[in-house]
Length: 122
Image 1 (tube, rainbow, N blue to C red):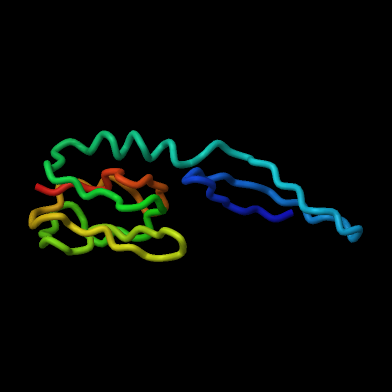
Image 2: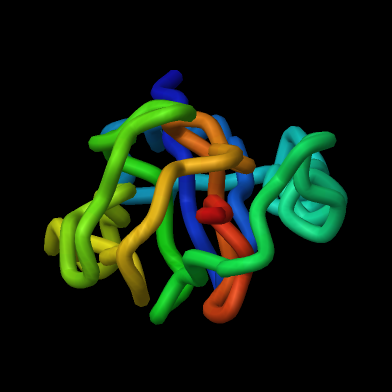
């Protein structure tokens, strides 16, 4: 048996595939867990206390690959704050304005939807 993580329309599923017998039977996959994307939504909707008023939002649905800046870091407009992985590409999510990172509202590995708030600046 092999375990895989499959993403369908932004929802992540853990599946186990049993290898078929030598008769040429097709593998059988059964979902093991509910979508993992749901827990990330409340976190993005409710930024941490002391969050800034400038939102850094995801331009596409994907997985958080790397967090480039930490809370308290000074950023200039266009600086990468978070790196998002979508369709096997690393996409920098940049600061929309100059400021200080007030909150990072995601963790590496989180699945996010397009438009989700990833961080805030003040």
